[in-house]
Length: 332
Ligand code: AMP
Ligand code: MG
Image 1 (cartoon, rainbow, N blue to C red):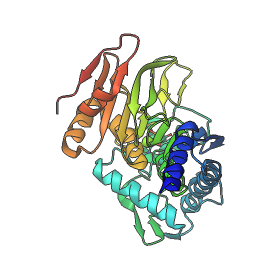
Image 2 (cartoon, rainbow, N blue to C red; image 1 turned 180 degrees about the horizontal axis):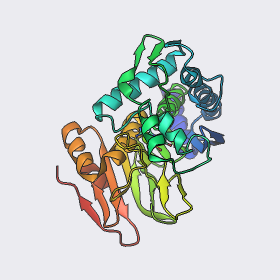
Image 3 (cartoon, rainbow, N blue to C red; image 1 turned 180 degrees about the vertical axis):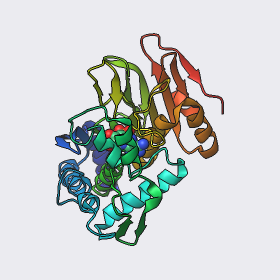
Image 4 (cartoon, helix red, strand yellow; image 1 turned 30 degrees about the vertical axis):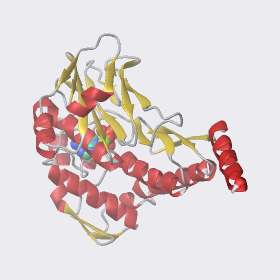
C-alpha cells in the first residue's frame, strides 16, 4: 500500500513539474506559409506526419501541378476521372456546400479566376465578354462524384482554393490527435485551427486582422475549434486605373465581390465547413450572411465593415476588440 501511495505521489509530482514538450513545424504549402505548434510526447512525430499529409493533399488538389487529380480533371480529356479518395471527398464536400450556400461557394470558378489571373499571379482586368465566356463554363451542377470518380462536363474546371486549407486542417488535427496530442495551434495561412486549450489551461488567443491596414482589431478566445477568415484584402491587385480587385469572385457576376463587408470570420468545429462558409458568407454580403446564419446556426461569425465588427452571440462573447473598434451583436 505504501509503495502504491509513493508511486502515485511521484506520478503526480513529475506530472506537475514537467511542462509538456513544445514542437513547432513551419513550412510553405498550398501557396501559403503554415505553422503548426503541438504539445506532447509524440508531438515531433505527429508534426512530421502533418507536414507529409498536407504536402500529399497539395499534390492531389493543386491547380498548377500537372500531375494532380484536379489538373487532370481541368485538362478535360474525358468526362469521368478516377481520383484519390481524398480528392473525391473534398470535391463532394465542396459540391454539397455549393448547394447549401445557393452557389455563393462554387468550386467550378477556375475559368473565371484564371481570366483575372488569380491562378497564375499575372493579374489583369478581363473584358466583359471574356468574363461571360468564362462564366459559361462554370456551374457546380455540372460536376458530380460517384465513389472515387469525379464526373465533370467538358470544359468545366475545378479550383479548391476556398476549402483546401480547411480540409487539410481537419486531416492535420486527426493526425495530431491520433498521436496523443491534446494541445495544438495550427495556422494554415490564416486558417486557424486548435486542439484543446493552451497547455496552461487558458484559451488560445487569435488575432483578428485589420482588413484595412496593419495589425489586429481584436482578439478571439478559442479552444477546440476552427477560426477561418476570408476577405478580399488577403489577396488582390490594383489595376492601372487604380481600382482594387480581390480574389473572391461572385459566381453570379464573375467579378470580385464588392460590398460593405471587409472580412468574414467563421468559428466552428470543422475546419472545412468554416473555410467553405467564410468564403461563401463573404460572397453573400451582410444581409444574406445573417439570414444564412439564422437558418443554419451551427457556426458563429464575425463580420467586419467600415462601421465596426458585427458578431453572432458566441463570437461576441469570445471577441475582445482593440483600438476602440465598435462591436455589434447580431440579433438571433
Ligand atoms: P478563401 O481564402 O478560403 O476565402 O478562398 C478564396 C479562394 O477560393 C480564391 O483564391 C479562389 O481560389 C477561390 N474562389 C474565389 N471565389 C470563389 C467562390 N465564389 N467559390 C469558390 N471558390 C472561390
Ligand atoms: Mg474559404
